[in-house]
Amino acid sequence: MITVFDDMQRSHAPREFIVSGKPQPIPEIPERIDMLLEGVRRIGGPVVAPKEIFGDTLALVHDRRYIQFLSTLWERWRRIPDAAETPSPNVFALGRASLPPASYPDSVVGQCGWHLGDGSCPVTPKTWEAARASAATAAHGAKLVLGGERAVYALCRPPGHHAAADMAAGFCYFNNAAVAAAVFREAGRRAAILDIDVHHGNGTEAIFYDRADVLTVSIHAHPRRFYPFFWGYPEERGRGDGEGFNLNLPLERGTTIKPYREALGTALSRIADFAPDVLVLAAGLDIAVDDPFKGFAIQTPEFGVIGRDIAALTLPMLIVQEGGYPSPHLGGNLASLLEGLLA
Image 1 (tube, one colour):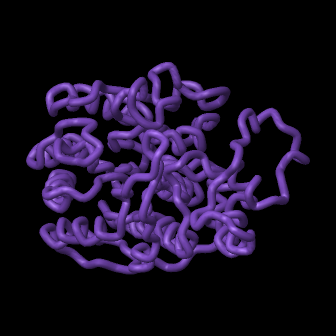
Image 2 (cartoon, rainbow, N blue to C red; image 1 turned 180 degrees about the vertical axis):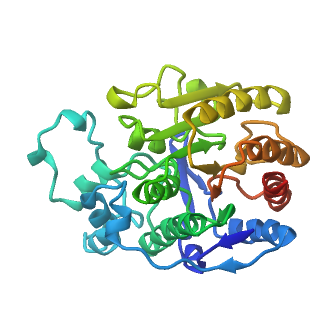
Image 3 (cartoon, rainbow, N blue to C red; image 1 turned 120 degrees about the vertical axis):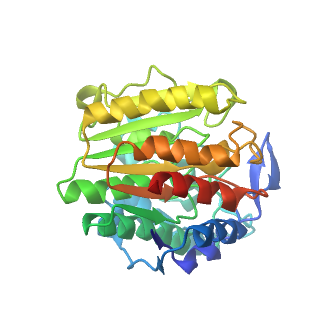
């Protein structure tokens, strides 16, 4: 299996995020990369660097105004006298969908309130470069699949599935899985996204919510008491042309492999009915029993079971790394999943 990875992704190194109203050490750290690469080494295969991407590729799913904001944010923020070290808003643009275009502020502080969705997307001097490299990794992986590879692993970091068209959130800045699906669509391929991260992929859902050409399916911890809280409910089925093309399968915290596979069976049946040409697997390894977020209780060998279930679709596949945070078995969990997918 080919792995795509850009070492630039190490450069984004935030220290903290907001939990229960106070700063805490962030688990989305560069050291995740080495743990994941250990899993890649167990599988074998070449590791290749992606080609650089620019605004046109990102704009397949992201607003150009947001791309401009993120590319200039750090430089503009540093010009503010006595500003905090990390860019953060004073106020959030609630109800912005109903606001007139003229309400978009010129102030970088105001733009932070428009584009930074929560306290879990800290911006560093290298966030723009690392996030763009992460999206490039997914785009390059998609092109390898278009070129004939049956399965490619895109080691994307920072992750992407909480990022909406014009908003960062939940450690995510560009939506890597959505970028990959858009690359497939541009090439005339019918794409489905299966998100197995323990957190609901609310950004991915938002990007495709009104569309019927990309199916989005997410299995995740129920948002009643789990991030992202406001999205991920079964009632969210899509809107307009997209009605029926979004499927959420929330499960209780502590879910083990048996009920998880039952939900996965439902997800795979819906994907088979959609009859895609290619699958984008948003591979969140934070469903593991020893992940710091303690959402589900999947054991290392059971990742292989999940992989074999998904492989039964017999679809060309791009595996896009999402969550999965420092733990003793992170590399082994990835290796088990990839082995199952290749079975």
